[in-house]
Image (cartoon, rainbow, N blue to C red; front, side, top):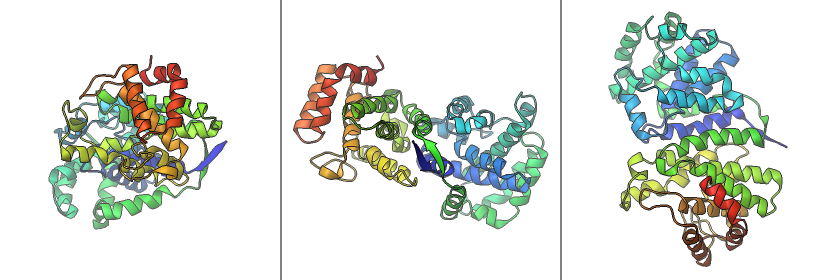
Length: 406
């Protein structure tokens, strides 16, 4: 069966997670998508190419999970930095078939004109890569200017773009950008209160299309990989939680489609964690009160992202409720009892089990017997669902392999 979901809306909404890596600057990808697309319009590109620009702009930094790397890229002298994130981004986009043709654009979005012309990629990919490069560079310059009013940053930014015409940026791309950027409205639309509504309308431009659960899983794996790469202590956490959750869903006799949707929710359950600074996730000791607050909000950020996708409402709850308790007292919503459906309860069990069987900065991996004892105690206290904990015990060999990758 297929789901009536709008691919462009899903890509747009999930791109929020990529922007969370900036922690305090959460609109970088959206500003790049806006500027690249507006410049493409000035070049007279068709609808398909403009859609590609929109997606490439939103996804161009999908290879960046670390707040440290995000900062290094933003503060590098030429706005590029180490291009290892381009290689990771290329691989991620290539793994999602509907956007796989944009992989070379993501790979080369920091390449200058001479480098692009020497590459064995299509002319269309060269053009889109340079459009994204210019928009990305402009946004880095805007951020570096630190002006409260974007109109004050306009003149020095445009001077840099003119200087780099024909070296960093193609002449036609540069001229098209200078044309659209000559108007105040272009810059004022970059403000969050204007940019969100503008791109939100654009993201809903196309009618719904049917996506299979398998296609949705492909996209969820892309974002789970980004989340898991944020810290060495969460490597493959989302991917393994999803595998355990799928096994529990099967053991609970959920139908095949429901199992697939549970797996998608589990893949995305920690997407809000991209906003948590690296030094907090990797801290070897106990978190202080402020640090703890930064961590506890991640489930809310997951909800904020996923609940905005039309048709995703149930999965958003399954994903975001993974720290809620059956008896109440969990976070961040305080949901309990019958309001925690079976899917949310089994994702919570899968999440706790996998986390206990994985090294964390403040403790080593718990032995299996100790981890199971801990989970049994949580079930006895009414925190985890006892029925799903029982299913975990019955399939402990398979769930252990899924949780540890053994």
